[in-house]
Amino acid sequence: MDLFKSKYKIFIDKAFDWEIWENETGEIINISPACKDVSGYSVDEFLDNKNLFDSIVLESDRDVWFNHRHDALVGKKTSKLEFRIRHKNGDIIWIEHICSPIIDENGKYLGHIANNRDITLRKSMELEIQNSEEKYRILAENVSDVIWVYNVKQKKFTYVSQAIKSLLGYTPEDYLEKSFEEILTPESLKLVEYRIKRDTEIFKNSSGRDNSFLMEIQQYNRDGEKIWVETSTKFRYNSNNHIEILGLSRNIDERKKTEEQIMYLSYYDQLTGLYNRRFYEEELSRLNNSRTIPISLIIADINGLKLANDAFGHIVGDELLKAFADVLKKCSRSGDVVARIAGDEFAILLPNTTLKETKEIVKRINKVMDQKHINNIILSASFGYHTKNKAEVDMEDVFVKAEDNMYKSKLAYSNEMKKRTIELIIANLFDKSPREKEHSRAVSQLCENMALALNLSNNKVEKLKDLGLFHDIGKISVDGDILNKKGRLSRVEYYKIKKHSEVGYQILRAVNEYNHLAEFVLNHHEWIDGRGYPQGVKGNEIPLEAKILAIADAYDCMINSNSYKEPMSVEEAIKELRRNSGTQFDSKLVNIFIKDVIGREYAN
Image (cartoon, rainbow, N blue to C red):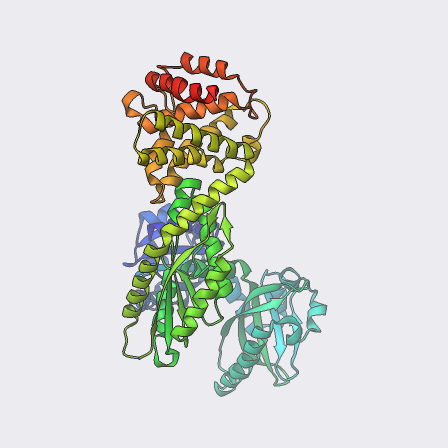
């Protein structure tokens, strides 16, 4: 309830009506500032005195009030009541009270929200209408709500107040000429026609006794826009013994939008726009009947979401989720229920769908996904599905089998997809910066030559070749404009470049075939004296492979031109390596590199 209250605090603070939020025991936990406008008492006064509300209810209305309170707490249903309170200044105020329960996504009752509206003016107006038509007109022209009269027999409006201009933009004269077909949406037209017919019969059978009806409809304003309107009606006989409807209409567009937003948040996943787990479970229960058999269930889990989040951040991960959701929407049918039921897990309920049809739907989804890439991540998912063909089969068993099949699929294909993603990232990096392609291949060759010079095992020789090729994979996160920039980098641009070793580490460690390279990529800009980055480790804390890569990487950068500087001669590069030997680079490895790698290469 605390989370709900915090999330929607802006609504209660901005509410025009006096709203009260109470927990499951009926204790007030929040109250809107409008309480002072209606009752004269402040928020603090109500919170300090838990019995204040009950005490200001007019004594003659308290029995009705307490019965309503009991029914609201026990019945947990939306209910409405009109009663009177005594204002702090002594005035009697009529209140229209609407109480609505709050149920969380698990069906637990958390409490309720009560909306209290001052209807004193409306009550006074109704009394005036009964006593004097003239007084009725005077009041009608001076209230913000629209007052109107409709002759049921003639099927036309005979009066409408000036407030119609504020509500719908029409003058009273224009509105009197309008038919229901012109001012009501098709859905509301059906409702209004039905209600007039029904409520007229109720009025006739009640021998003219007082009666009132309330409904919410949509009307078109003068510009053709839809407006939600709350309409309160009473029936009466006019002087010609015709049945007339006395109506009071008010704009509830903002309230409906708020209600729709709350409803949306209750049943939809905010990121993807798909249904959420709560809606999925409700639909699962609703559809679990003999009329929907065969009913199939697809469980899908996005491959590589952690790779996307770790390597490129949650913004890219979110884009991956939204792209997959769009594919599912595109490939689903009108009666299917597509929901995001966990972080990277989705479910599709398929009523009246065979196993064969389900397989075809999965094929269609995979086909649409096949060519989609989101920020260098391949859009891919693992699927599992199962079909219920008999009424006695439990849908929970269908879910377990579908999910089990999904996990088997994930084990088989997820790592292959990640490997393809690594290859895609490298290809895109090389497309973005041809210099990176040349540099990576050169460093790979230098690392191999150094491994041979050190008489390392064949396995380590191959590892160092791959390390040289992939060592700058993290630069995929750097703008091509920065990678190819002419001249010196700014401080911000240099900072972005420096992050590449960490990004490369996150990318490579997510894939089994390459995770043995991740630590070396992370450490290849560390210095022997501890002044490197990103961790500032030193000496023997730096792996041998990272030390070799650091020398090969620096040497190739020095002897080849790039966008930042002019190339050095081999002799100048050797001097630079020696100058930084023991501080940036390992001294023994520098000597071997100069003698057995550069020397042999230079001699050739």
